[in-house]
Amino acid sequence: MLSKEDNYDLLYDKFNWDIPEFYNIGADICDRQNPEDTALIFDKGEAGIDYYSFGDFKKLSNKLANALAAQGIEAEDRIGILLPQRPETVVTHIATYKSGCIAVPLFVLFGPEAIEYRAKAGGLKVIVTDKVGLGKLNEIRESLPDLKLVISVDGPAEGAEDWKSFTENESDSFTPVNTKADDPALIIFTSGTTGQPKGALHAHRTLLGHLPCVESAHSFFPQEGDVSWTPADWAWIGGLLDVLLPSLHHGVPVVAYRAKKFDPEDTFALLARHKIRNVFFPPTALKLMRNVEDPQSRHDYSVRSIISGGESMGAELLKWGRDTFGLTIAEIYGQTECNLVVSGNSHALPVNPGFIGKPVPGHQVEIIDDNGNVLPPETEGNIAVKSPDPVMFLGYWNNPEATKGKFIGEWLITGDTGFKDKQGYVKFIGRDDDVITTSGYRVGPGEIEDCLLKHPSVKMAGVVGIPDPIRTERIKAFIILQDQVDGNDDLKEEINQFVRQRLATHESPREIAFVEELPMTTTGKIMRRELRAIG
Image 1 (cartoon, rainbow, N blue to C red):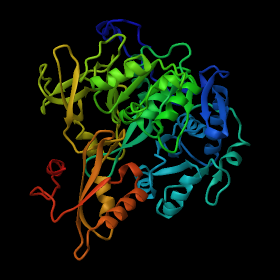
Image 2: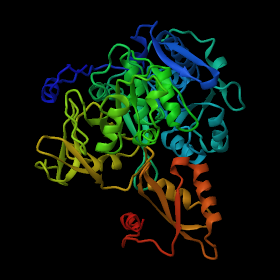
Image 3: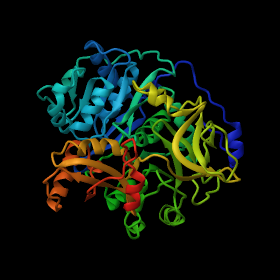
Image 4: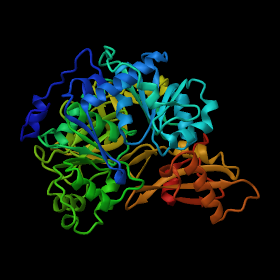
């Protein structure tokens, strides 16, 4: 844990990594905890609230690990987790890590095509899912030759093992695989600018790498009475490694709650109902909550710390946070490949509006040029993280060429540009790629363009993000139609639904423009910068 210093420089200088040679995420977040302590508060809405202790999770995860072993699942086999925030999601993560296997979280709102790509690319042997996920898997099952086992958490179903019957007769004792800290544990698919998403492979040590930022941004987390929650799905690195796993590491209860749609008023009620003290809110959620008038008069919440990331906190949003919660929202910065490396800490580091913060203790973050040279203050360049670093990915799954392209020498290039001021605060300027940030999600245009081209009316498509006051960006598609096809509003809606059903709602274009041509380079690449200029 971080030392409790009021001064950032002391905090940074005194910190030293203590990464053991052998380390297993599953054993860490479960087996070493007090078995009587509450690990998860599962709010099922009108169906009630369930509580799970660390002892419950130990027994349940051991049963699942034994059941998987009995089916021949071995170390480094990939296990897909296509589930929302619910207890079985946690159990599957723990059992996967204990077994020495590799967890592959899958977003529940993904359509069949998005799931199919990730399942194929990751070579998934097992997928644990619910009845909604099963419906999607049934459409693509025959195209997944590596998939040997599907487990349903919602009871018996054709083509799937029932979770309860699959695990109930197994022993609740299991010896976790003695993994090294550098052994692979997790693949999270991240969006890129061209082609399909890439799987960022992380080692068990990635959890330890996340802790300094979580602890500092939450004003020296944990403290007595802390309870964590995020509306972000646990399939994303923000939900999983910014909230769920660090909280369990520290023995802090986590609230699991998945609303069908984010409701700001309901969110304030949830904060009060469970006395939630520590929250990760995507920026879009905060902007929506800001529209709720005088929530203090209706909801008795007592939040201690809020972190947010994805864009800089403006002075107005920071002021709203102080007025509404009596605290300063702490910004965090990172990416799937190398997360939580810059943050603000209102206790030890004065907030500098418009700047993200300073490098988190344990991480060396600099602004470099294209040759890997560190640039002086006030000079714009590449935001980069020096390797080795415990939070840094091992590489892209089965893609050494893309992995190599992520580095300039010993520096991991985030793909973002910015500068440091003379006090060392990091300013985010923009991306040098075309990834779209919408409603807290990072979306690659390549995957959407590939999907659009499968529609029979589409000849060519270019996808960009355009500014949006609530979502940060909204997705706009510029489409060249096939000959003799008439572009109209009905076709726009049809195309929107086509993408929504195959990928995800947040990846569907909210705007569509039919055009005669697209700006292209001499090598045939779409010039998305010009499309953004058109708007």
